[in-house]
Length: 283
Ligand code: PAF
Image (cartoon, rainbow, N blue to C red):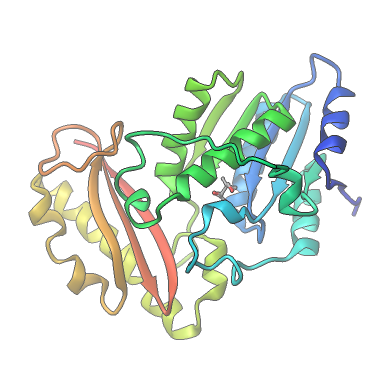
């Protein structure tokens, strides 16, 4: 199989981008690597949207979106495996910054942050997480200058926030969201699943089962959030819940009754591994 082009500096990526014809469309899928089928679905979507243009994958475990006691050091990595998968998906160039300094050159830190959409869900339990995400994705958009950038809906809040960044900072590109991809037993695909031991992996199935239970209650007409999610502790045991919330899909503010499109979103730790998942509840 052909080897994919790998660039490691911002200067190299800028030169590569400048060498493309003006009409050449560019798709970018930003990732932290350890690619799974969910990431590959984003790459395929981006490929299909550039009409024979160029597909770019970035792989960078971005330190600024991790809190001091989070899993930055334990985040799984597999550069060679990722490059093979990228080649198989028709990626034209992989940007693997050789060190964080490449994207955070200093001497002063410059941040991109948002108001409002980051108050609840992951924003409430991971301070500065979205500041790190908004900043790194803005930098990647500025360097790669894609026409389209594709993200997964498992990180629903991230997607909503990045749409707001794109709109407010006038990045001339389209942000596309893709459905969650699940394992055959229902667990949402995540690079972090690799850190689950056998027992935790089995226990984590409580998450998709719980989402299905709530969906069924909703389908039978229940609209009161307290009734829909009141037994989360019980249903998600022995997981340790970071949050279980129902929010408006547009504002990401909690609702007590579902009268407009809503999102049930959860973050639960199993065996010390933080997993997130969600499902839309559409009245
Ligand atoms: O979703 C992710 O993997 C990361 O948050 C992203 C968008 C690549 C930014 O580091």
